[in-house]
Image 1 (cartoon, rainbow, N blue to C red):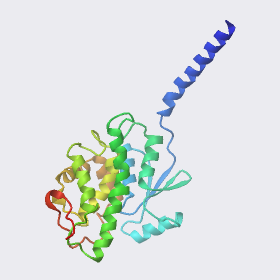
Image 2 (cartoon, helix red, strand yellow; image 1 turned 135 degrees about the vertical axis):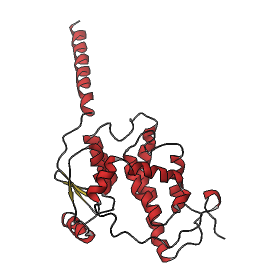
Image 3 (spheres, one colour; image 1 turned 90 degrees about the vertical axis):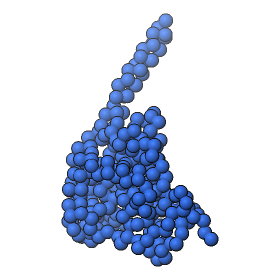
Image 4 (spheres, rainbow, N blue to C red; image 1 turned 90 degrees about the horizontal axis):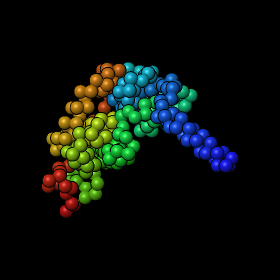
Length: 259
């Protein structure tokens, strides 16, 4: 009898510990001092935009209108990999915008700017968080470098800039946001490379009406406008030259095979 009572007390005790621990997992932790080292018009805008969406405090470091000066500031604290964004997070130096965004959301804004873990939208949200750089930006800049040397006369039969943007276009035909039903951090990640695709003339913007409509919604968000005012006060500076032409699309948006 005493043994059964002792076992029951242990079970109740463990249940109590689990109940107490569960809310703590969803409780935001205190935000350390955050300094965003920034280049105007570059990926570091994502972190400024995120902090504005969340109304979290941060310090923004850049030399207005001076990309080389801003880069020198970054190089002083991160000489091996000077890149934007570089973020001082407490006493740590962090790079990679997707990882920085996920750290801030996980620790300091649980439940915000992403779908619930058990929702149907969560896999899409996470896919686009990674697709933005892993597939989209990497393909765009690879094509840009190649096409600056030799402008293409036809599309590659493999995955190229048109295909990676078309994938986003088709998703937006069925979903209002890259997070699914609601705006999420995936939309913050996707804005930069989709702007690159059209402003550098890698693709024909008119071919992607769903992307264009999504951009209008994004740019109307108050937090996006606040980011522009703080992080790009003089508009875009030092942008890469657009391609003189992009390769024509294949029939119905498909890729044209080589002749």
